[in-house]
Image: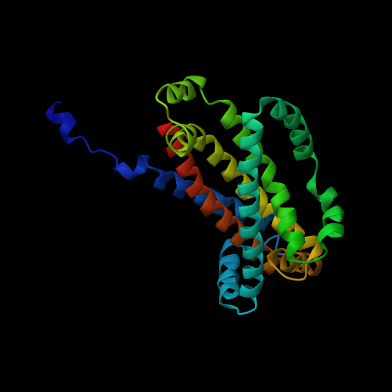
Length: 259
């Protein structure tokens, strides 16, 4: 390296990092948000600053947290059901190829149906309340988990299992050392997709058939055309879902790199 090259100023390392990309993306979102407000006016959208200030008031309000707790409780229960049941069913269908080949087109067909059309059936079975919210949320999230898990099990290389049998590895050691590492990246991707869809299903259930929760408050605000509440709750939901998805995506990429 020449002396001239050594003296040449270099851009800070963070400019090429994700922090800079995130800052640029956030700035573009805020500019577009402000532009949309200027174009549509207060009737259509509040300003970014106004939304942040009202969100701070919302978080400081005692009325918000019972609704947030109701939504989070229903969502977490639905997510656990969707994840555990989806992994179990997907593993069974993956190992039994005939059942998987029969079930896959049926699952894809059900997945393509707008779940709102099935909500009256959910209400008939579970009634209005947390049971319906959990069932509707789990219905949204379980199918992606099943499909990703089934494909992960199908794609296990037979040489791995044959080698384990030659070395007389079976039972829990086989699962821990062969099956789990081979399927975990794809299964985790299904869980990441199932997380977002379960959250959507839970909120939709609260919007159309509940008397509590963030979805219920959001539906009330839509009916009253209260843009402050609508924008504030939307911002909180996007911030929550986006933050968790960034974390899940980072773990997902790491698992796939290791695989």
